[in-house]
Length: 308
Image 1 (cartoon, helix red, strand yellow):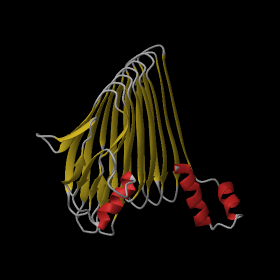
Image 2 (spheres, rainbow, N blue to C red):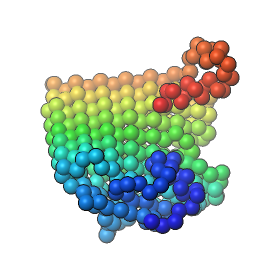
Image 3 (cartoon, helix red, strand yellow):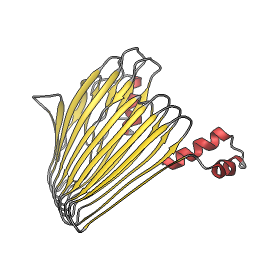
């Protein structure tokens, strides 16, 4: 394991919840270089030979194991694209923790673009956590453009937690998923933008098999002059169930565009979408302020609870 700087350690703690080297399989990447790696008897991590990135192979029947693959950038002007492929065998139950943190104190933009592809075997369960975080007082931007592709076999289940709360100037998150018979996908996105930041979230989920289901929910807050777009499409190709929802708070001069979309290609496809954008209710602020909080403190409490 390479020696990490204090800034890099702080970034890893923010995006992966790690304060020390984890048990199990992991791959740490810092400033476009490998900083540490460990495979286990059931989870093998190897470097790709043709492009930058890794292959993660999880043996069939692997239970209660985890993989941590955080990425941190602490130098201004760095730009990288990595390709990570996950091959999850049948009848597994694993947790995968990714995420990227960028600290930019310089004048040049720093950017990390990650392409993650998941091939999930029959009857396997995957919990995937991806967090983004930015810091630093430089003029250079912190840019993150993740692409996630999910291919689920029969009876598999994937739960995705996508979080971006602070410091990322520009992001375009693209997620594509294809689900076979009785497969299940649950996505929970939490997002906050501020200043002049922009964030695009694009989801395209195709329910290919009978009994497949998807539940894609985004909660977001747009502050200052930031901009957000939530664009979610669920396609029902079989007797299936799909739901997408966007629930947003708009503040100051923020802008939010919600574009939920449904496409039914089977008479027994049950698809639902919801979208709500509004400001913080005055009675909520008043109630908290009667308990001794200032208006700003009350706003923060409401936002924290909303994004929890």
